[in-house]
Length: 590
Image (cartoon, rainbow, N blue to C red; front, top):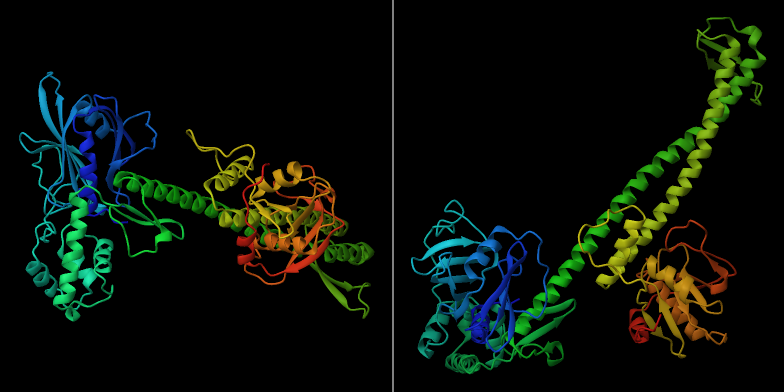
């Protein structure tokens, strides 16, 4: 991220389009985010989003809709009171601070024109959105309130005098001279040129500092003490070119592609990155909107993935504990024969036992060596009742063992199911896949149904599709819902079905509408996919079973994703990520 002062300047330049626009509605979709809907006299409509979220503070126009809470927060109601129906008269930025001031002319409760300022401070964890009365400089309210107990510099409370954020005492790049640039950088000995630039120039982030150094043709890690007149001159020239883009209102905004979505953004062309990793939207506002939208989607994906992972792990731990107790019961029940033997020995020796005995030692006719066995008795019971007591203990232990074995098998099935769920969560690539898993866990009783208008997954899941070297279509289920849909509804009897042996993973189908013999190459490629999309992804020689779809069935009452199959063969493969990428194809119609 790089929402620096220079980016704010570019945003402010584009937001001049809002001057003269009327504020129609104000929403507060999140705790620290507000959304203003505006309309110009010519009918042009805009959505202005301002956020004081510590991890995603920003101000920009957005094309996306956000939920409107049924009960608006107090700050939102206050903004509606003071700003709704008002007209934007100016959009300014003090210096190159990350502060945007929206000046609004509106009517107060006495229907008299008054001036208001909505000040958006984009400063990480210190970000804020503050409504100010410019006539007396007092704060009307803020989305984040705090007193001197929190900040010695200023307090942000209703009625307090608005004090701008503390100045950073940096040089304004728009007015800095060559001599000031050289002198300022030379005060940062021991630092790299990129870091020194970011520390010297107002509005420059580390990302923009590196960009300036790159444009100057200098090494990113060049130390300041190694710089001379040539290097300072190149830096100053690169700075003037950058400022020229800003002054002409023609910056070339950039989005940088990373491994998981957009890695960074800037209001300027980021020449330090390869061209194939860059996307250049049409405006700075669109750039920021796309970046943070993707950031929010990724954050939502990671949050849901974490929640589902935690739930599956918690339920697995519960099953592990339950299975251990059941195994203990089974082990204890295995000693039941001792109770039977004691009962039979007592029955055969009733005449030798005196009433009130607490312990007898009798010959064990089951012992090949004829040794005796000590048997404890309850003195309040007769010898015959003591014998019956041991038979009762025997039957009780035997019944407990049978039930424990039954429950243990059920627990093992549940453990296998949850391990499959955990694998599906870890291998999910899209929010839709996680939603499918979430819905399944709700239906199975592991999660409560979410309150509110949650997005549900489509009834027909989109099944990932691949194409073999021989031209066969290969379909892969990524979770239980997709597995059941693929195997039970999409696949036909003559299709080939694959699944890793004794490992959680995907159902894989090789489409074979004409009933041809599946080539060995296609079979191995499908087996690679089955192994790759399983818990054995990082293993070697992973066993993959395969059979025709007509030999696969789902038992009545079985959990999602669970099937039985027969007439199968096994192939061993080591998953190859490069082969998987090579086989990727457009999703096939389901």
